[in-house]
Length: 108
Ligand SMILES: [Zn+2]
Image (cartoon, rainbow, N blue to C red; front, side, top):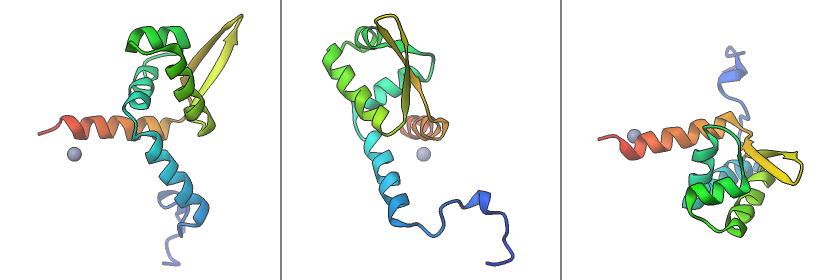
């Protein structure tokens, strides 16, 4: 154990309460089909709330609600351009997790 000085492969060991909480929140974020669709869309480029609602056929209020949830977990970020907020993804690890889950869902 002590000989392994490369901690990059096993960050957050041992799993403390805070880590467990964040991991469970991460999977919670990915456990909702609307949030999955929003994150999947944001994998391509940034989108305004309006555009997301249009693309996914959702109410703007629904999109805003889910974006707030994702923003609280720092999985998305936004920039303001005049009156418009443009959202983009803010965490490559979680986008990779999502991609892996999609691949998992589609393979034989
Ligand atoms: Zn699989």
